Every structure is written in structure tokens, then in C-alpha cells.
Length: 337
Ligand code: KG4
Ligand code: ZN
Image 1 (cartoon, helix red, strand yellow):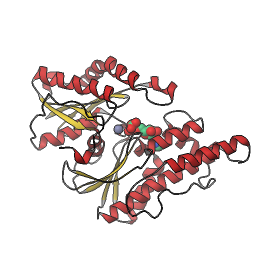
Image 2 (cartoon, rainbow, N blue to C red; image 1 turned 90 degrees about the vertical axis):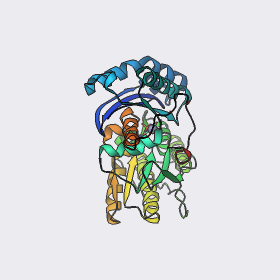
Image 3 (cartoon, protein in one colour; image 1 turned 45 degrees about the vertical axis):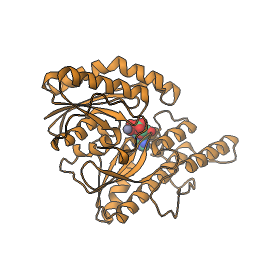
Image 4 (tube, rainbow, N blue to C red; image 1 turned 180 degrees about the vertical axis):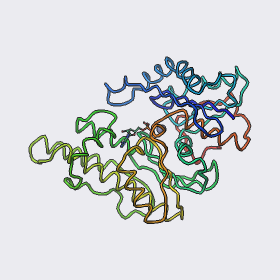
């Protein structure tokens, strides 16, 4: 079973090809043009997808050493994401499926992130808990059976990656912020600034990052005025510490409460080494394991969409209608997957 997956939900044009659950190709055209703006410009993103999609599909086919006609299933992200960006990949995939008379699957972007863990662990099966932390999402899902996800926690304000990006901008470290903060944090003291854990004492499993972001802003202002003496690397390290602590503590509490012993961690923030090490260590003390997708699948990509679509094909699901449209705001647990 050969599946081609397309993701154009945000600013990366991603095309992946999977044969029976094994990734043959994963080509990503990243749009560096947004760097100058410190964030993604939706109009520019959709135009750039349009300009590159054909070429990215061609590169994926040649990497996988297959022909378009060999593909059995064409899958594309239906949502959530930027409307204009989603439209490019989704319409392209529908066109291919129509022209080639192939099965078409309209996919949920977050299911793609979750199932990207199949690349690290092909035998991954529910039940498991999934933390998705990226520039646009910070969600905790409980997956009881294949293809069904229950949202058990989410950010109340900023996404974790968004907080990394915004604080990196305050510290003038560049975009994207996550890797820049990690790099600066390497030489810093993570106890130097007393950021407080958000939502201490909550019974649920939500996240909140606007308070930490605000505290970082106040610290930077005080530093600029000369009333606080602290280095950028100390601030970056302290910020990274509290971010990781919040993600890990909430996730482990949720795993315990839901009696789950497997935790999947996906999305751009899953690339954070401190998060990986802390979660793996602390989970193992609870006889729980954390599964991270391979690094190249942390950010948005087409292979994760192909993997999730392949799972659907193993259940012999019929083709989705080519009349479907994109859904820019789409909750995973209300979708009919
Ligand atoms: O999943 P992703 O590629 O797409 C979006 O949702 O946009 O995630 C990108 C996010 C950015 O906010 C970036 O700063 C963050 O993931 N990120 C990281 C790291 N690498 C990327 N955050 C923390 N630590 C990292 N090493
Ligand atoms: Zn994403």
C-alpha cells in the first residue's frame, strides 16, 4: 500500500510517501521568507505553497523512486491551519485523486502529528496519551482506540511554541524561537530568574503560557532599564526550565490519572532536548515510557499525514468525498475520523 501525504497547513510545503507504514520520502520546502516578519504571513504562505507544491511532489516521488501512477492513496491535511495554505495542498490532492482515480483521505493535521510516532515505533497501539506542542497547538489527547482521540487538556492562551517564539523575540534571539532559546540556554543558569509554574493546583490538565511570557517581558524591560542584572542566557535557561517543567508535570499527572503508561510527544516543541530528557527520565520513574517521533518529523511534514492515512487504509476505510472543503478551525475529538 503506497500512500502520498500532503501537508500545507501553515508555512511548510510537506509531501511524504509511505509504503506499508515505512517512510520512503519526506520532502519539506520551508518558507524562510517569514523570518523577516518574526511570524507567518498567511497570504505569502499560500502563494509560496502554490509555487512549490508541484516541485515538492516531484522530489518526493523521485526520492521514493516511485511513479505517480503507483500511488494507492492520496491524503492531504483538511485542517486545522491557515485557510489559504490548507486550500493549496488539499485542492492539489483532490485534483490528483480525481485525475488518477485513487482513494482520497482528508486528514486531521493533529492526527498526523500524533501518528508520526509510528515512525519511531511501528507497533505503537492505543491506549496512549499524546502531547502535541507546537507553534499553534498545546493539546493533550487520550487515545483509547485507533483513530479516536479525547481532548483532556489544552492551552488556555498561547501555545508552547508560540511562547518560545515570543520570548525569543523579546530576547532578540531570532525566529523560530525554540531552537534559539535552547542554544542560548546552554550557557545559562536555569535558576537565575524565578519564573513561576502556571496553573499550580489545578485539577485538570490545561496549560497556560501568557503569564510566563508577561514575566519574561517585565524581566527584559527591567534589564533594559538597568534595574535587573541578568544575562540573556540566564533568562533563556530559566524560561526553558519553567516551560519544560509545566509540560512534563501536567502530562505526567494526566498519564497517571488516565492510567496510561505510554506517552507520545509530537509537534515542533518535541524537538526540545531538555523536554525529551526530562520527560523520559521522570516518566520512567512511573514505569511509563515517552515515545518521540524522529527529529525530522517533529515539525510539519507530509510523511506524518501519509502515516496517519496509511492507518486508515489498514482499516479499509472508503475514500472520502472529493466535495469536501478545508476546515481551518477543527477540533480533533469532534472530527469523524
Ligand atoms: O509543529 P511546528 O513545526 O509548526 C507549527 O505549529 O508552527 O512547530 C514549530 C514550533 C515553533 O514555535 C518553534 O519555536 C518550536 O516549534 N520549536 C521548539 C524547538 N524547536 C522548534 N520549541 C522548543 N524547543 C525547540 N528545540
Ligand atoms: Zn503542526
